[in-house]
Image (cartoon, rainbow, N blue to C red; front, side, top):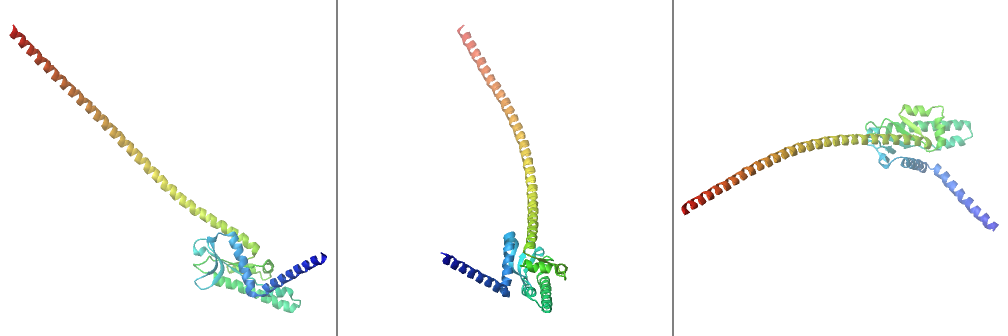
Length: 267
């Protein structure tokens, strides 16, 4: 039993060792490392934003392709985000023991960051296609901390070029704020549509009210005409009755005259 448990533990240790080696190889491979940063960025954006408000691997008219483009509405409000891992010289700099070599690596790391900022500013901030702002996403919190506390003050230098450097932690707050802006904008647009519909409804109600009033007036007029018509009919009926009564009187007179004549003859 103990031998079995030891064997299982050795297998798990061997598996873990292979995973560590694979992870190390991943970070040693610049292409894979860059892909990891892009995928991390995509996960953060897709978990926070609605699909209609972002595009991955977006190509601009100048041929530059950015890892992500946040779309607020019009093109001049879109914000590009590009992932920059900056891992290789950072790792060597922290592992190196020789101070001279360490200084040289620190210089290379500084140059890497400056180049990333310059590239993002020049390639992805495009008048008419984006907002005058871009984000540089650093997928490693360790690298970001080194950038943030660097004596060169890269955060300030980047902002001077309209680039904001963000990490996985800080980009989340930015994305949430951006999402709130989008929601407020959509609510404003919807409120405008509702106001227009309410105004149109008010016009229709006013029009309906006028038509009902007009119909009521016409109904009253028609009712008056019917009343007058009934009065006329009643008068006509009175006239015809009188005429009928006159006919009866004439018949009675004639009958009386006839009887008188007949009586006289007999006498």
